[in-house]
Image 1 (cartoon, rainbow, N blue to C red):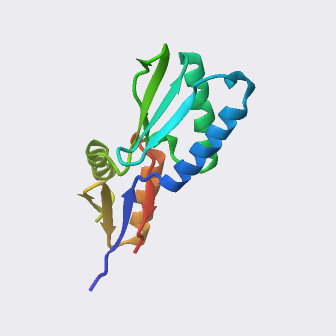
Image 2: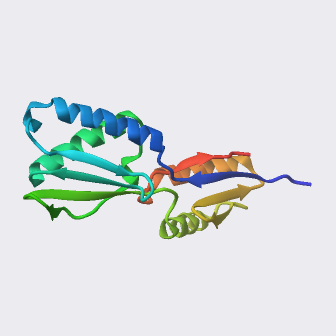
Image 3: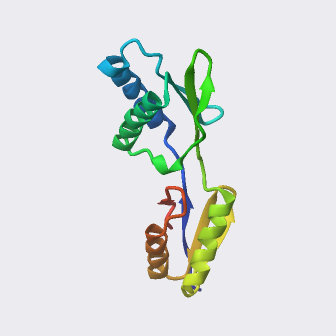
Length: 166
């Protein structure tokens, strides 16, 4: 009897690392000369998986994003999973931007992953969508390695992690 091997493709953000990066970014913003007397702030809503950036103008808001993005990258948090919305005017002649943190693979990206694997015509490689992840199975470990390599080379709009390899 031939055994089957599998791995899961997921896309998650490590929330404690996001919190650490936020604390570092807030500390840097408080110490920087160009933000003296500024009301620049970063707020995290963990339940809604959103970040809210506020500043006096678009230039300072972009500077806040650059500081935060640098801290996130240093902590290996995938910035690709963050969807920036439009900059909106806020109270007191300031601006605000909401950033949504994408946890899990969206259904359209999951379908695109499955379609990409089918288009490759790898022998006996099967992919199935399971909620917010994709499970890939095959009788051959080499075929699974090829599938993993093919997924790494293509951009699906989210950061992919491979785990649960059995």
